[in-house]
Every structure is written in C-alpha cells, then in structure tokens.
Length: 334
Image (tube, rainbow, N blue to C red; front, side, top):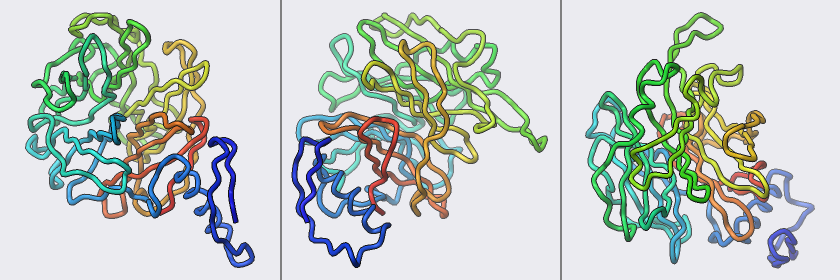
C-alpha cells in the first residue's frame, strides 16, 4: 500500500501491509513510523532513541549542518549529591540512530542546559550550577559551537525574590524576541500537600534583558511566580520550553515533580500566559516511572520533541515525539 501525506508535502511512502491481519495498535505504530520517515528519520528508529550507562537528563537540541548537536545533563552514577557526578555534555547525531562519543562542555558541578541561542555575535548556552548551594544560573559562550567559555553566572538577584524562599535558581530557558532576550527560570518554596506532607515546590519566574553581557535584567515576576502550585501540580513546575507556533507562543513544561508529566500554555506576548492543562501522552516502558524536560524544535514538516523518560529501574534515557501543530504529540514506536 502507498500512503500519501498531504501535510508533509504529499510525499508517498510505500508500505506492504495486509490490513486483515494487522491490529489497531500495530497500525498506529506503523503510521507513526511513516510520519517520522516523512521528516527524515531513519528506518527502524524506535524509543528510547538513546540509552547510555550514564543517566541522560535535560536534553537540548541545536540543528547544525549535517545533523544535530545534543546537549544534556550527564549524571555519572546515582549519587546526586556529588558535584563530580554532574556535567553538561554534548554529542552529535545525524539521525538520532547513532551518536558520536560524548564530550563534556562544562566543568563538574553543572546541569540542566537550556536553549542554545545566537545573540550579539556569539552562541550562548544557559545552564545551572548543581548540586552545590547556592544553585545559580550560568552561561557559556562560543563563536564556533566547539570551544565554550568557562561558566559565568547571571540573574543572581532572582534568588532573593520573596516567593523564592529556598533562594535557589535553576532550569534557565532562553527565548529571543527581536532585541530582547527572555529568560524563564525556576525558584522554589515549601508547601504542604492534601495529606499534610511537607513538600518542596518549584515555581516559574520570568526576566528580560537587552544587555549583551547578561548583567542587567528586569524581573517581570517580582511579587509572584508566573506559574506555581496547582491541583495537577501540587509540587510545582520546571523545565520550560517556549517556541513560536503561528501567531502565538507555545510553552510546554514539566508539571509536577513526584508525578511528573507535560503541560501546555499559550501566549501572544510571552508575558501573559493561558494555562491549558496536561498533554496526554501514552506511557512506554522507558518512561514508565515519569517523564519531563521536553525540548522542541522545528522540522520542515512539523515539530519534533526530545523527552527525558525515567524507567521503573529509575534509569533515564531520551525518546522522540512528533507533532504537526505543537500541541498534540505522537511517540515514536517503542
């Protein structure tokens, strides 16, 4: 049978299928594979696309000539409390089927890379120090995407916001709007759930700058967070991804910490946001425990997401999803 996909330029994909013998689940997996083929993925690609001895966390993708640079938090071992367990690492892949040998971008004691942007004549990569306290926002600069500067701190004043009672700042995400650079970041406070258990909750903040050196910022969320605690996220939010879809901005973020999942918000100006609730995604084994830290980028035919998933064995890996509108997402078959 030949499938023609108008939404992907009318390209035709030949598939040998006997529909009298195929289950609905198999047909869904087949159609998902066809969608990924239409966007340039290799035959046989399946989730999780990358498994490593290390725990892979917080992915960030930059499209480059011939493929993609993938930045991520590299957790060596399982001891979260050691700075030596954490680095920002980078690999290259042309198709998400094979990955080059990873190399560290940062010294030990850093994690959670955000969007790589090209601004004021150089590339800028935001991330955070971790786990040494106080946890601060950092960035590195590069002119060639190969050699990166030592970490430089920025937006330290966000640690003193009245709602950020833990006095820490994590998970920076950059968005460029003309000459203005937006930074979405996360602070924390104490809260109590319905059962009376004391929890840490993560809360979303927002700041802007036009300063090429990232030293002077205007914090837009001085008195209260942009997104905080809700019935679907009693312990807050983290890992924000913001991208342009048509005449509006779309935000996809990790909602909840213990029972983490994805949620959606939209805005016309990056300042006022409409919360639109959880994004429904079926579970796969590699993400059976929880999933989050989404990163989204544009392909010629639609949108692609790389997602961190945690298995029942608490190991974290990366998988891919696909969308034609940035709102409804289909997992690559497992």
